[in-house]
Image (cartoon, rainbow, N blue to C red; front, side):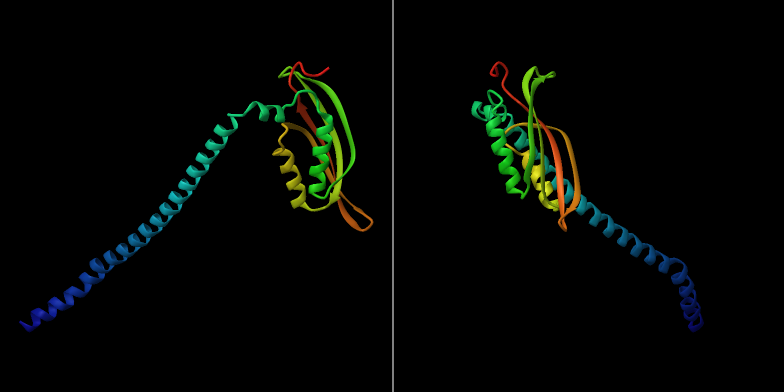
Length: 182
C-alpha cells in the first residue's frame, strides 16, 4: 500500500508538469490578453464618446450658423463695398497681433459663381517672426464678422536690423449684396 501511494505521488508529478502547469500558463496568458483588450476597449469607448460630443457640438454650431438674422447677413456681406470699414477692421486686426500694414489695395469686380459684386483686397503686413502670432492673425481673419475668401497667402522671414521679421502678403475677396453697388 505504501508503494502504491509512492507510485501515485510520482505519477502525479508528470501529470502536473504536462497537464496542469501548461493549463495554468495558458490561463495567465488569457487573463493578460483579456485585460489588455478591456483597456483598449475602454480607451476606444472614451474616444468614441469624445467624438460624439464633438459631432454634436459641431451640429449645434452649424444649426446656429444657418439661422442668421438679416443684420448678421448684412455684416457678413454688406450693402456696397464698405472699403472704409474693411480698412479699419484689417488695420485693427493687424495691430492686435503686432503686425504693421505696409501696402493695401482694392480691386472691384463681380464673383462669377455667385453673380455678386466683390472686392479683392491685397495687403502686406510685417511683424515679429512669431508663429503663434502669425496663426492667431490668420485665425482672426477666418473668424472675422465679414465673410472673406482667401485667395493667396505668401510669407517670408528676413532679418531686419538684427531682428527676425515676418512679412506676409494676403489676397482676400469680400462679397457685397447684389444691386447695391454703383
